[in-house]
Length: 569
Ligand code: FES
Image 1 (cartoon, rainbow, N blue to C red):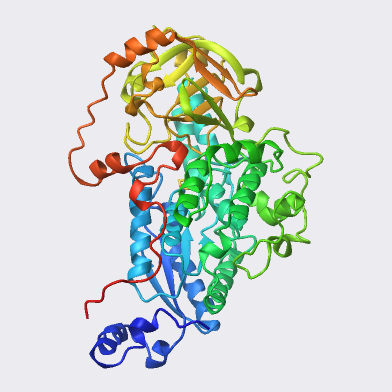
Image 2 (cartoon, helix red, strand yellow):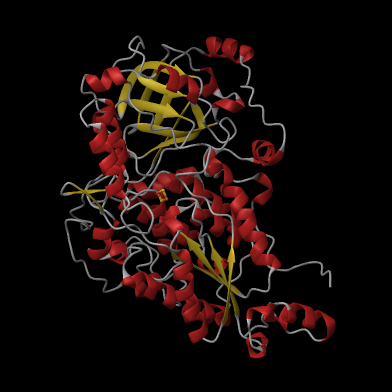
């Protein structure tokens, strides 16, 4: 076994060794723990402000059991936790900050390997991005989804939030029923139960080969989640012995497989910005076109909300991600390594299919269209994305008049105005909700429909924005427009009544306005005054990259490795 990096602290003699060990001993740690056992960091995103991760302390205890059993020495540490429901203005503003916390905490401390505990949406990509920039042996343990919500005999999950709030706005659901449904949705520990961003991230790490098989779908409340934690603890110790660091697993092939698997499960559109950012950290070339190209040949196999009917609990009972990946083995890179020490094919071969209603075979898929389609045109030279499986087929080729909202407050002020000049053929355009423009690229792209169209029974219309959309949402929604409005791209120049033509089969999105007129508008364009002149948000605006590049900071791309260059003792 290679020399443990933790021995650069605990293996020292004299004053330095004394200092490194003596203060640790105030936690009741015997001397032999410091004598060459792999030190395993447990990077915990637990927080009571992140309810999806509120059970993580208990899970960390199970990881520790596994680490001890395998001969390692576990040390748990907290990093910034990003709770999707409470944090304002959006957790995406802090993803890169949390990644810096994870990166620096891992590098600065005497760790030989690390277990990354992610759950709620951004907690997974943030700590993984940070770990990639250090590149020591790392394994992910996800917190697991909630059990299905139960409301009046019906299974519900986060997707029903949109359905219920529209029904409530239309007067079809009383205030009392709305309140009761609120208490029925989140009835166990865990993250959102649908194939939203958290479940997508858990599937992403499993398909990349960064977690043990079945990590993605075991419900948080199922005792097998604790078993998964214990096995993960055992495995990371072996990974240190094998020097199985992240860059050995995160190859170009791993990213390609993750994109195809995400298509098959109908994963969230947020997958795109997070996977691009992770690839950027580990140093693998990946572009927006890879998502379109690789997912085009993959049908939708998982019948999971919001693209389908079921939730993560049923997904697990139906065979989970190993069953999906076994079905996909002919198109995956079967022989690439994973954290289990086995190849992908060895991990998933023989995985049982237990319910074909939930996981369909490749030759009889749940839906033919899946994945992410990338459209380009004069509206967005660097692209925009749409999730076809969540969109209305009849709207995939459509030309309509733009109804333009300059920012989110403008949208909120006017969307329900009875005088709003809008019909079902209109195209809603929301600007200045991109990475720099908001700032933080919030999930407002699936903007709610105008009240007067809802009253007419219209359920979907084309919507375009430079923001993101919740992984639990659906609709014919074009997202991640790049360049965003705040940088003065053509998207900033769209005006009320302009014609926009979208054509997903042709992968195009165009503003039907002459070049002369656009040049005139460009000359008059002024950026919005955002008023952030200090602190983290100022730095964010100055350094954040565009959606097609993964929304990471320009100075965080790549890795610095695990070496600590200077020592103060
Ligand atoms: Fe945490 Fe949905 S709010 S995963």
